[in-house]
Length: 127
Image (tube, rainbow, N blue to C red; front, side, top):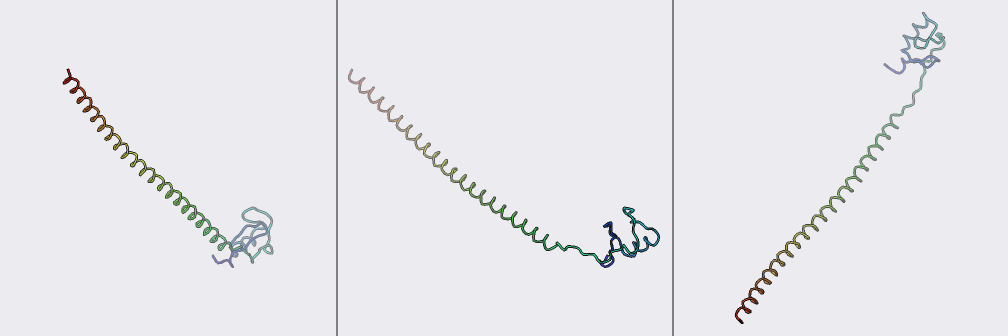
């Protein structure tokens, strides 16, 4: 419906111009709220605030903020992932060091047992 075909009454209700004109020739009230109205009360020039550009700007700002928040979250997650990877590598190094220490202790233990065996052999030979 073209905007030029929209009309209003003083009570604020909007109607198609031809419809409200016909109604008021038969009735003397608004068809919605029943307030007293007459043909002279029809307002044919209406002005609407065009806030489409405001809405577009608002939506764009929200989208930008959302994208920025998403980018910040992604950066935070990437930082956490890097920290986690670093901790994992450090743990792997600690594990390898632990294995080396175990191997070294086993070798020392074997050498100790060998020394004990040698000492026992020497003691037995002295007798």
